Image (tube, helix red, strand yellow):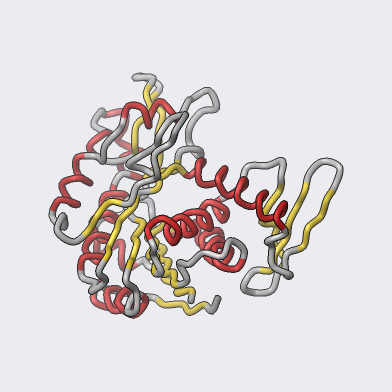
Length: 284
């Protein structure tokens, strides 16, 4: 994939970039509204780091740091998506369900209790009900469904299984280097700078790059997307860019145009502040 970088500083320049990326796409998927899960020790309950759920005084610090990013990016993502001429426009929400949860927590408790979008998300989506649909994970025959959300841990685990099948079938590209050691099977692959990166280990859970690759693959496979727009925390740029490359070069995703919009994720004030911090990369 070829990579171009941009620094849009206002909504108009960002919108222009989104239109450029999606100009030939019939189906566009946007990932926005990404949020963390937080464990409230007092309530003994997992809460999404979104304003409407963090209402107690003890939540003040985490609300100030993390609660604005999800709501603002969801609103921004839908606004950008609605302006596109694509025939099929879909939005999805990915949940960070691993980073800040104690080991004894069961993330499944959250997905069992939260079977619908947060109120502020549903209200915003309803404004575009004539043009945008929600892209959800497929139903599961056993286990806990995470719908309407996409679980980061599920995406990582799915990437590991996907990659294992590629190894077994001999479906990896020539640039992939396999190392079979007594403890595990490892695979390295050159990134966009030509540096060999470990992209798979059979005895470890995948990282953020793997989940990005699998998310894009799923969007192409199940939604038919050829263009994907990802509004993500800028601190994750390295993983997001590697995952965008792996989705096509390793997994063979049909989603071959990816616009990653990285923005500040903590202590965000408003949409203008959000866009002012944006750095975008276009993978084609």
